Length: 150
Image (tube, rainbow, N blue to C red):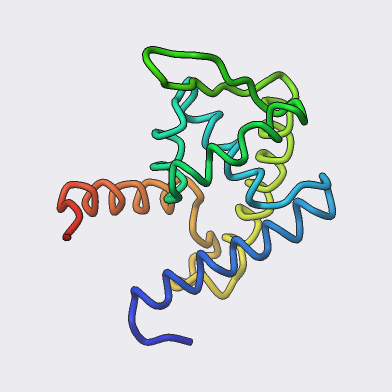
């Protein structure tokens, strides 16, 4: 267990991703990388390739390289936008996977939050998903407001 909060958060996200990847492969036959793209599109679409790359923290080239396969596999559509922009949106197949697998995965994570080891107040309630999400969202907003350093 790490002492520093930054290391603990990094470890948690890494372990959650590994859990989600194994779970998604077993239950739905997809990996976390595909699911992250589709889930991001479900939240942000319509979005262009540059915007999706920013959300995923990868290069525009990395997204551009994946798009043709994702279109061919029926997960998303890519249409011409203004100038050279390519606009991405989920297909019904993509929407359905995010809805079903995302809901099931959310339930798995929610169940983890009821583990008695998280009940620091001994009230028997654990951490509510809504409270955790609200705190993490607020923290994300605070980090974004501080801006990136060069």
